Length: 70
Image (cartoon, rainbow, N blue to C red; front, side, top):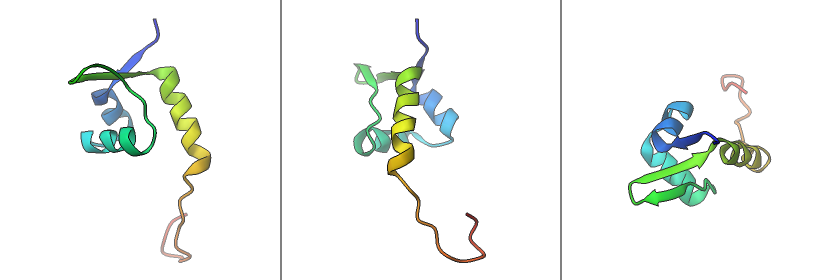
């Protein structure tokens, strides 16, 4: 059976809080399977697919300034 990741796993993996995970679900297309109102998970394969879909779409604009790292 494929590995399932819950919100807590994602929070540790990405170093973000629960609010950020919810934002990603609502606004960035992170699709988690809802088992109940308090239990959601995503498969490892679906997570990798979500990450790959984000790579090309969300380019970060950086300031042109030597003090800002690129």
